[in-house]
Amino acid sequence: MRDSEPNEPIFPPELERKIFEMVYDGNDPVNRSSDNHINLVAKRVYIWIRPLMYRIINQHSASHPNFSRIPAFLDADDICQFVHHLAISNAPKTEADVNAFISQCPNLVNLACWGDLIITEAPLWDYISGLKKLRRLSDREITGDVRQVYSNDCRIAIVHYSLSDSDDWFRGARGERDVWWHAETLVTARKNNYLQSDDILKHPLTKDVVWPELLTEEGKR
Image (cartoon, rainbow, N blue to C red; front, side, top):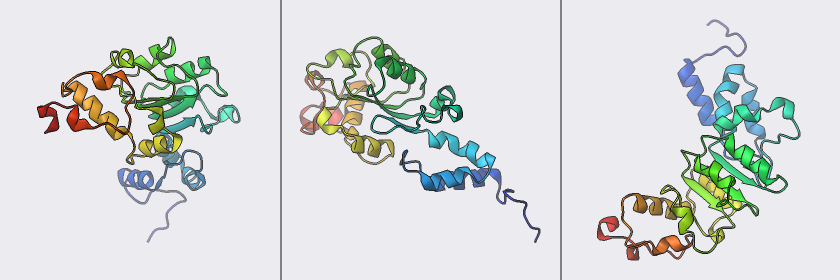
């Protein structure tokens, strides 16, 4: 059998790529020592893995990636295209930093704006409203009547801050079960006119929601 050259592919490229994507564990965006070894296998593997490396970005409780420490190796304009899940706050960042960062992430589906950011005010809401793929929005400062927020977009569901913490948010980003199953139900109900009234839209969702009491007969099926 002919000896393979170093890093020379053994399997068809499509299969090899699938294998590396399955092995790569990008669910912990901070502690990723084992994942870093995969990036060193070959240039082609690094290219395949890059979208997974930056699928989940934490700019809230940790700084992944840390743009201030190694700016020469990180280009926000480049990697932000891969970001699907972003947790961000204005500590230590400024509100202008948050706005700029969100504007660079057009493919966000899950956004957590924490700290004391007020997402319903311009210009932050303008950036959020422009996210065409956004399905989940988490904010710890929204209180009171939130129907104004809901009126902007039927894709949005707002959960009470007591149901939203960092651990739960990252469980959802990893595809595990989290509190957002309430949110998915609400979005589906709004899109299909399954709600008996808009009373549920007055306040953020809580764990005490009793869906059978809120849905039409068609929505209960």
